[in-house]
Image (cartoon, rainbow, N blue to C red; front, side, top):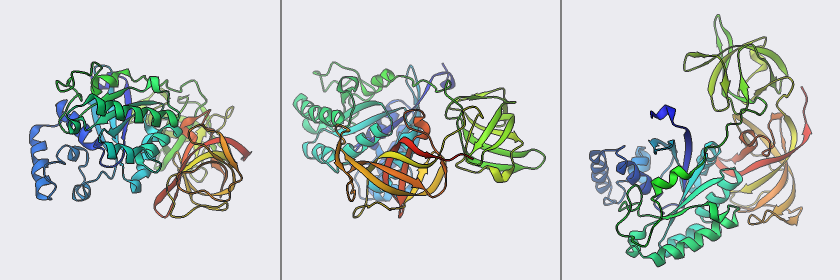
Length: 434
């Protein structure tokens, strides 16, 4: 079966800095024959040169940006592709480092499934899952952002000489963590591995006779294919708009939900401009129709260039995209040097839109473990808090509730070059009609 014929899944790899996720994924790609030994040997040599010993040689497969090598941490999302008997995967390596959590959010919103790498080393595991630890934060974010399928890899078992006790101790902690953020423990496989030595990544480990379960690689085929939301109303967030001489207005975007074909009547929100799709193409090939998941360019009849821009959403006139003047959301504050108070106006990033938005009211703080309201009308929110808030974008914003359209119902709030909060839209409290 060729790669294109297998169903495709996006997988994000998360975990606390230094818990070994880049090493694990690098070693796995080597074992799958996707990287040759020569490349790894070069990495090892370079690692020695930078005074890091050869410990970073596998991690560097993923961290192939020069700046990252010098600092020895993962910065941007590295995209790698690999196949299992059942699926074709794109691997998104999410940075563990706090400054780069924005990538984690843009990455997670594209992810169908996730791996959380936890260290079996006692101190490292405890730091990662403690309040403020990145494993806890990543698990909560994945859950909030709707990544419902998860595998936990308990790494560094070579450190305890492959002790089953060390695995069990870390497994108990992992189960408490994933349960606390809302995953069902029985549906999350927890697998013992050594990313450094290569145990139980692709090949069964001879060092862990007590482990009778699958390898990490085998477990990937237990992921399920999410249903394509083709039956839902059409939604295409616009990424770019080109004006092509002799052709006219050509918007480009990804069909998030529904299906679309030439001759179809559409409406652009928030301008309310109505038009018709003349032709659709992907990679310079004409298409008879497009559906959820397809990245397309299309030629519009009847829509003026000034009525459509990046961040707008296209739908059908009978079920037009919703546009909010104000909405209620659940957010988690990821990072803020002090605390935020009502009236705070960061920049909101939702699908392809970016708009300044004011958090006009804090309705209640939420217990992240149970989702229950804890404190009504809190005066401020600080890093780690989860809350129900009301948000007012400075201009009408096409957005949907997370329940109906998860693809258009998640967002991040950014300020001063950092991601302050991530959230999901609960309800549109004030609609805008064009």
